[in-house]
Length: 223
Length: 385
Image (tube, each protein chain N blue to C red):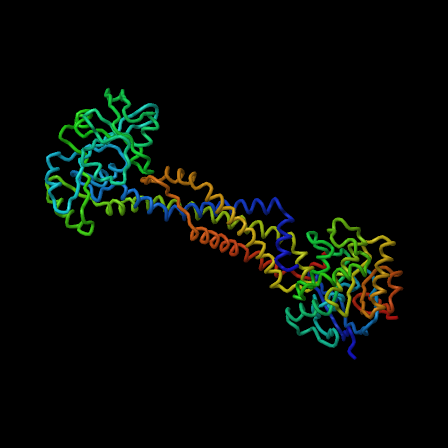
């Protein structure tokens, strides 16, 4: 059985002026299906760059990135779009909900791009699953931060991905809402969803099944 | 929900900006619709006027026969006159069914008004078989026949007296024309001899209007008439061609203004959509993250643009149709020759053409913003978070 995520000596560098910075430096690790992994590290340690590489929004300079056994290095833009649409769900710190769409429509958005037919029933079901069944016809401006993040989690699940990438999912929330989001993520993981979460929050990371610590673009601990 | 819904919802997000852009497009579309309608309507109006005049050709003297001919339609004065003794020869020419002697004068009336006097003989009604006359043609030398508009302005009807202080002459209304919708409505028709006496042009004519029996032989008739001394002949067809040439430069100017209006509309749409795209680049990047392809984003933005232009085009057509009489008046003021009757005549073809052009230029204006949006980087969207 393939790993859900597999990275082999992956390197990604950036230029800042004349200086070359290795944001991710020969990183190798894998995530099995159904795992809940937290990536932690200080600012500039390469967490978000790593998430971008796994999420197919960036490509490595060297090394191999595989999602469900499919190497993404050589894929063209259409191939990367296909993987993002079908295999991966994204949850962002700032939620990114379209302000003109209701909660229900925001949840359906990725299905629209996948031409996945009418997914309103599934969107309603997902909103129900994150405890927002009564808020489906509200605009984002009428929702609290915690509610918006739950809508964004429902949106990430609309195309039934096997992998959920969460970038500081509780970064903009108070502790009560952060607990609700974490409980939701754990519940989804228990149902079989693989989750890779980037966070500063050590308490949050401790709730994950495994923690990978990064520093200066390299893994310094994995437990 | 689909890509169209996304586009339409986004348009509602910035209502004022969208409404202003639609208004700009509507203005250009209304101009386009009016000018296209004018372009086809003008020729029809001109043909109708020529036909209503009943004059197949106009015989005048040396000088500018075209001017003399146009006078027979619109009024005015020229300094050269055809001797009246040429009329029997004109009437005797082959294929001539009727020939009417005409002396035209304009006299300043009250305020800015100009009274147009048409000195005509008893042959004149034969050129106007479509006329419906209340009362009768001239009964004596002091008779006058009023065009419908002239009668309305003078508030006179059959049997009334009408006095013209500028001529120091009084007439009795023997007949009033029913409205024809042509220039005929504005004239004062008086007997030729009376006109020659009042304007001191005894034995002189502005010209002779000729109606032929067989229009297919009009060229031979023209050649025969040109054998008469002093006679210069212009056919209605020549007049129409000359008039169309004359307004050619005015049309060019109008279409140049239209070009500018369209260019401004294109730039307005481009500016609006591009500004909107720049503001939403991050959103497009996020959309890419959740599975949108570059083509999806391209379609969303292009649909927004086309929708704006379609709304503007539809509004423009409605405004153009409702304001056709205003457009008619405006165009009339800049034309060197404007026939009576409606010049702005629209039909389904004009409507479709206006919408196609509006949407076409809108799509053109939307290409760059759509391309720009489709290249939004998902990574930059996340980096900026």
